[in-house]
Length: 172
Image (cartoon, rainbow, N blue to C red; front, top):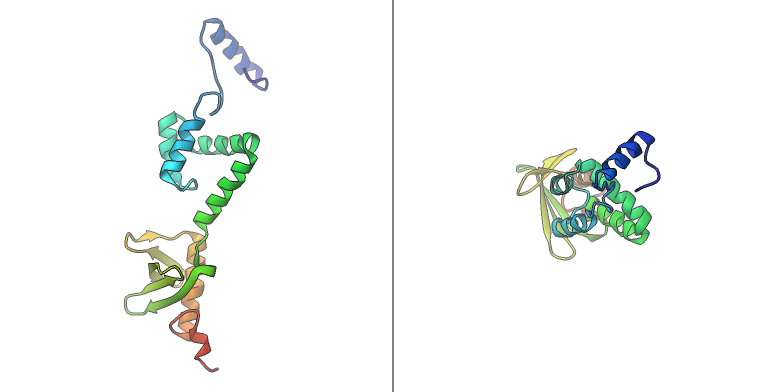
């Protein structure tokens, strides 16, 4: 039994244990860590509220509480894993535009920004100025991605297509 329980809870826990039942507090003590790690590996993005909703339902915990307790577990038990976990969250939330973007073109009529990356992949976004949706599902982009898309949009509005090469052709 954990030592740091408030005395009211400790009293209840002791009374229940006298009746033959065992009380376990925490993800690790309840055996939920393998389930959480399996689901995180299976579904990918650990930053998603959706995955924590599924995890919470699976283990019978409040999703936010489960995510916070899992981070605490990583901090205490697996500091290098926690560092990797945080890097994964950051990497999945930060757009890959900066170093990997080869070219971007904006179609004024359709309001579609097409981005071609150095690895040959393309991404399309519909919008203008500060509000952007990722195509084809029209999912609203996150704040960091919208910030970068807004910068690219402003560049193209000022210099024309394509980003980031058009400024070389324009004289002031």
